[in-house]
Length: 249
Image 1 (tube, helix red, strand yellow):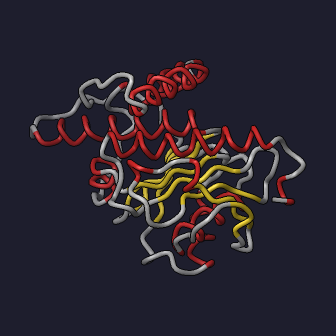
Image 2: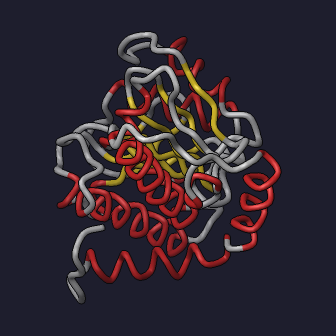
């Protein structure tokens, strides 16, 4: 593993452990699409290497051994197994385009995907959870299966420095975080915001939207809560490890 010899092996092992736990947590909450979809994490200390799940395991069974270290040429620097083509293309495109996008989570989770199929899409002025993402969501038009570098680059081009979520029209969602805990928090709260939006719209009643000023104010308040992401993810990891089993929510 010479390409990562300049950083602590313990740091990489911990990064793999956290990323693997995020997959299991996603399966617990029903965010996975069978064995498809993918999460990546830039290797700590490197901008040209990223961790990615190997293709094959169900998300509920992913461990550190299922996490590959890959370079931008597609070489598996560390780990056993093969990457899936769309996974590599999407995540390489994102990490190349925006090195600050340390964690990139892509899912077809149901409520976010449902809104990606609608003209109105996600509304960041409806719920308190939705306001976390106000002015931080981009949309990418559907271009087919991501089986080539050009399509992967399109994903990278849309994630500007201020973007936390990309709604992939007719497809799903992509969440960008500074680390695993941050990305998990955004993934969870985005799906919850989408869920309550779908439920509210299903009533057929007029919806109550806040002003841009209130949404911007609430987004800034959410930003102050960012340090709590580590505690939130630690709680999720305890659930995934079986020390507690709360009702799904």
